Image (tube, rainbow, N blue to C red; front, side, top):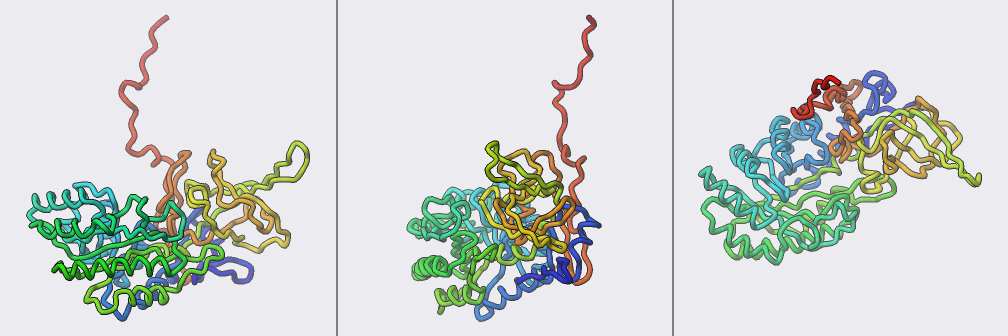
Length: 431
């Protein structure tokens, strides 16, 4: 569910008309509903109430400080994949004791900072990474708490770009190799084995892949405990999908029941890494129509219609990158006439589109459109391609709204750049 709806012909977020946000802040702009963020977190957290657990919000979905703070105020920790995310998580109130560090490419300085801060654990993705963490911890005279991210070779039945649990994916250590690496880690003076981690992908809309992966992880945990390894944390990752179009993902309670069944009888704390399921439908991208145009073939057979808007693939990459669907709806009163059109942006790429061949009410220049379900992997994946400033971000709570990230000024695009000395202007030689 979410708190975006139409009242008297105008779309609102909670108690704020989207048209008002566009007038005050401009477009394109991301708009987040605080009530939706809070509701989604509470439903997810309460689904696991019967077992000790830690919710670590997966920051890569949306790393805006106010979004993270909305969750940490409710007791959340953070799942991070970079040193930058560590800094942002701490700034937004995430306790170090509730931070897990995932990702295949941890650098030495990032490992050092995480150890200094005293995070819950590193989710280790390779033997060489494990050896590096051991060496860094040794130099710092610390013990690094680790779990191994095991790859169970389970097909998550999702887009191949966001599948992470198959043998061919770059993530994790194959589950068949994990015992040897755990035994090696247990012998290290500066490594503390605390858990097992598994994450098989994102936007999963069926329970069966989770059940399959959890069953394989349970067998591994049982073997490790029999070998005397003190496994007290089982990190089952995230990946629960949301509704973008016609998907019918499981409710968090169904998901929780399946996971809890797999780990029944184990004296462990579950670590959960929800991301998209918390933020995806809590945000929209608000954009304004710049132009409309029609293209007619030379033979006069059929027309192609375009709605050109001020948001582009640099603002929301998912449609161009994954072919992803986002519902697009008029913010104001909709025309009765419907047409088929591509919704495209100003980027100089044919792949710059938010929707293709979409049936929509006819719109005019100046109309506002809401690109729905854009709270996850929207702003966090945005860029300055074509030297376009990144969009503003707004959070709504009840009848008020605040800018939680200013629109990037054009003058900031060259921040950090300087002209190479050998390219500096020189005096022209006299003729």
